[in-house]
Length: 607
Image (cartoon, rainbow, N blue to C red; front, top):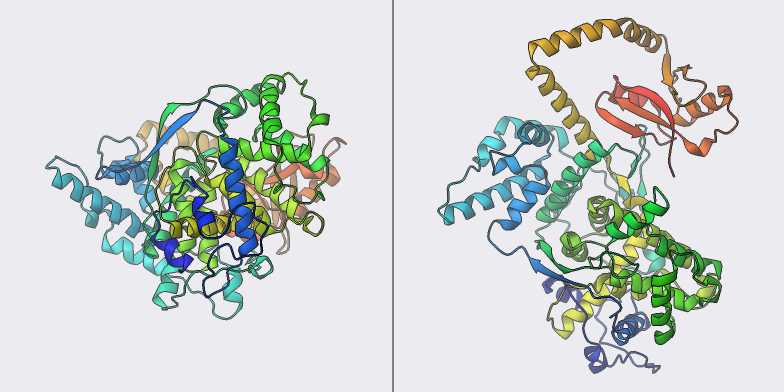
């Protein structure tokens, strides 16, 4: 049998409930025989036989543990009623006004729609049309507008002319990540080029070394933007992610969680949001649960050279006892960490992930994560993961980042601990993907396929984590356009009185602006630093001036000895962006062309 075909026919969501199928196929977990654990497909998988034996050993360990440490139950169901999925999607995308005239975000929706690419517009159009047909079937009055009115030919032609991608050919094109053109548009160009291939699987050392071309306006990472602009990013990313799957002909089923019973305090079996509320009362600004931080630190302190550091389980009875002890002593600061064995700590870390009442990858996007490998190329799979990471709620995204960084540090010691990227992936995949609430009866063939698939997803997350927290430039440009559209609308609709007031205010600032413009025309930029003793300075503009040069110039003049370079960031503020912490490799003149009305502020950043 071909596991790839099985993966494509699978329902996408699996709760691995038995290892009997593994045993029936000859891969008895715990067996030390050299027999092939399951029939190999004609093309050699990167996750070899021994790796998959380790996977099902981990499944068996999980099932033996029982995980009945917390009284938690969350039921997960499909958004099954007709139109429910489309309504939920449009609301999350900030487009509720397209089916509900009473929605309060009408003007903002129009601004958002004006930024969409061809494939993004098609994704919205598809869902609006489906909802319209659903409401018509129900014989209910509806206010869904005609899609032809939403996407008029004139505006579509303008979008097509603007975003039609020109993608380089050659070997480099296979490993270059283009962040300037919509991923779904790139996928459409690939599809139209008839380059149809099956998903490829490669060993650790054969995963492509993807690279992002240097952008003179600087890369933008999660955390660099204001909350207001990140809200726009999330809406655009949802539309783009759906457009990418639509373009590749992949249907992703939406799920929702029905909360039945969830613990409201403690460490294990508690939601991330509740855990962080507890932790932030003790240490303000905490972004990753303290218990998880302590477990990872303890494992590292005892040495990452230990063979099988994440693979070999701790003693089940001892792990359960330590878990109860942590619940009572952790926040009191009296837990005896020095007596905690390293393999027990690793088992507790995995237990923490499994016991989360809602999946780390969320109920809403769990199906999308498991569908990533259906995309035809590694590059498209990576692009989809990039979008999905950006869609995760902040607590989930920060926790996932901490875990992936930890897994990378484990693999950095693979020569001694024997934990390669594949080993870490197969051991951690069942802990991440065996989630409470998901139940699915599937065939033996599908179970093996999903086992390999989920391990491969973890491989990609660990291997390419440095790329996944990047906000693509095309999304940021859409945010800029969205902001400009909102500003134009605000200025058009403002009452005369407010206009007059603004005009008076503008006149008061005219001299300041004139001074700034004169500086810019004279080859200088004005940099503000209100938090520091050097509150303002002029910096000469050159073609090669980078954000790093501005910070160096500032530090040479700042009198306070407590100011450290790593604590500073040059911010682009105003114009077509609310606030953006600049990558130190940003070329200022290139950014000025993109946002000529921006002001420049140096601020300290919170790590």
